[in-house]
Length: 279
Image 1 (tube, helix red, strand yellow):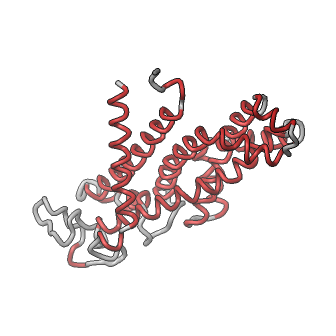
Image 2: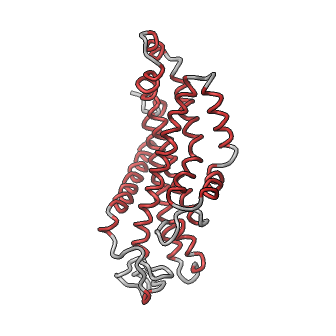
Image 3: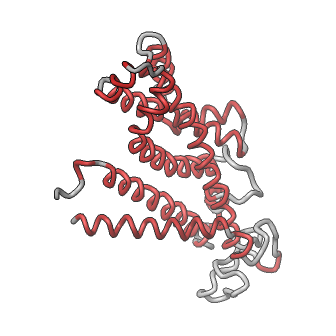
């Protein structure tokens, strides 16, 4: 069973590596500008269907734009939103979590009460509320998703740090004169790296999914910038006539989120001593 699990993790790593490579090499693996409109090729089918052309291997959309180019460049936007929102949420989240664990009588209650307020709404609803106030756009989408991810980052960091603080190695460092700041960054944080990396990885996949949801609702990245969620939204009126407009963005979202989640599970199993084979 464990061998099959490792195989799934390797397959997920390979799939995500291919997707990431396509995103990075987008200008060299596409045939057209993603915003270029070809009026003579509106809703052209994929190359394997009747009427398809190798000039547009996955077909075109309702405005005659190459679907393959828009998918690959849209992946750039989705991955960028994912990385940026994880950094924006987990950077402050780790700091607040450490301070709330080391100062449970001062920082702790204040930080946790704010996080409780943010947790009153599910992450997606909170992101929708934030972007509704700030307005749609790439930067505001990142901020909205980061705000929704912040409570999870704070709570994971605090729980992990609070479990490490009573241990002997922390007490020994404190006895030789180490300050709280040194204990936070040099002693406790390295021993919390495993759950934090796993949590950030899973938060990355959730951010991509939330970005697509906001784009589908018209609250995320705005046209003509290619983005998977907005591509799904604009394809709703052409589902019966051109089903490939819905199929390909949905498949790219599925593959990306699934591969990242499987990688997160693999990292968790690799770092969890209870799941390691006994010698």
